[in-house]
Length: 129
Image (cartoon, rainbow, N blue to C red; front, side):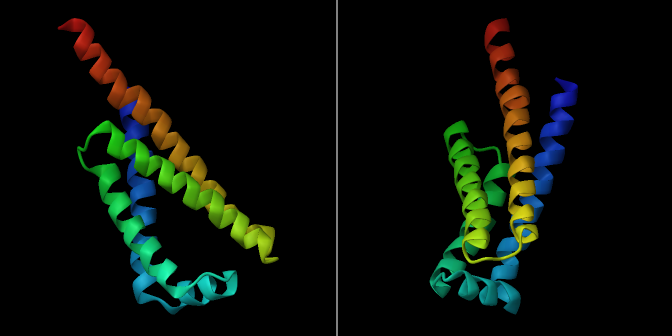
């Protein structure tokens, strides 16, 4: 369990930091607004996604119920897959689709470690009770 603990906290902290920074940049930097426009998304979607990224980052780090965390992992997965598809759909270079794919890999690592460390720990406690 010790290795999965470090893998969980390391990957989860990285993905949460990435999502928090990305979400904040959606509000304070001009680049994301231009990218959303180039991708054909309305500006309100940038704001909606920025809020979702910030809230989701906090959810991944907070001690919240399993269902809330699992929905957050699902939402982030959809976001990363959609980002990659959006970049490719407008003819952006493949390199622009790589960061969401890397983020998805990191997210899946966090999720697998979550299942092993956090939920495995609960199962161990239940069987020893």
